[in-house]
Length: 236
Figure 1 (tube, rainbow, N blue to C red):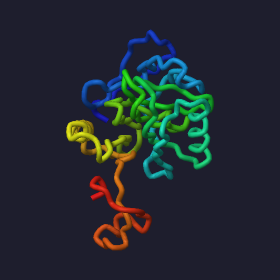
Figure 2 (figure 1 turned 60 degrees about the vertical axis):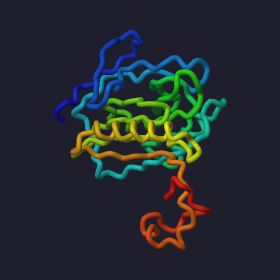
Figure 3 (figure 1 turned 90 degrees about the vertical axis):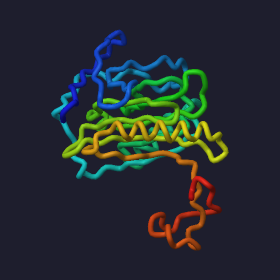
């Protein structure tokens, strides 16, 4: 637990108190106020309130449902509510989202009590990533790091080891070498900043096609029987 400081959450947007978690510059604690996103999300944008006790931990040995979803945008009216409802229907406590199309960085509560931590571009609605937490799981957030419009990480107060959830949205195979190298370089830096004794779970859309695995028995044990189509360069 060395290096972890107590997070005190405030409803006051002017509150400047911070609780950094280990990681590169730009890490935001759960005290960070949501960026103004206008009418992009109508379901709610309250900052998480109350005081969190870092002694309150959740066991990683308990049953947790974790998922990831490329939503192709959540800006349309009602889209976020649909995603939240599906998360609840499948009892998913941690849901990584790719292609949110949300601008800026921050977090807000929905009307159901779940919380969305998001990271996007300031000048465009392209890409965007987020981590959606149930109201129960959100109680264990120590902090989050909105790295870019393709990477966001979040630290949970779990025992016996802390959890780090990293949600990504990788460039397509048609992206420029510069964009691809920038993404993987940023991801490597994000992962290197996580202490080795902590557990890291990477979610997201790698824009990879593994193809039909039947002819390739070298990867069948890894992927299973669910590969379809033709493998692309990213799926190699």
